[in-house]
Image 1 (tube, one colour):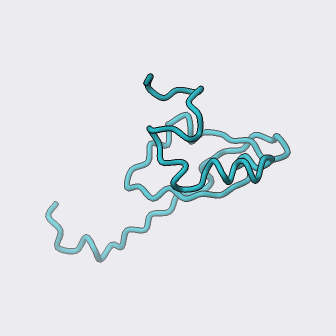
Image 2: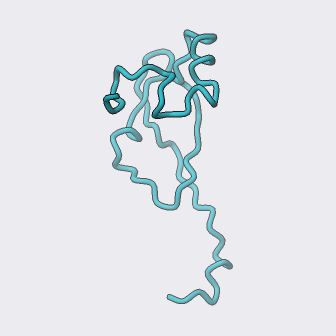
Length: 84
């Protein structure tokens, strides 16, 4: 079987999409494509220059920045006594 690409069907042996119900959700909600959704990335060092994190389109078609806010959840007290 060839490696996955843009033509790989939603239900395939490479990704567990069927297991999480993704193809079923898309079939049931055909007009929902994720525009206008808010997500959070929990990562210690996100690559903010990554093209996928630059811009998105609202349901109206207006282009907007994807990253609207960056919050640091580290507690300064956690660093007390840390080597460094």
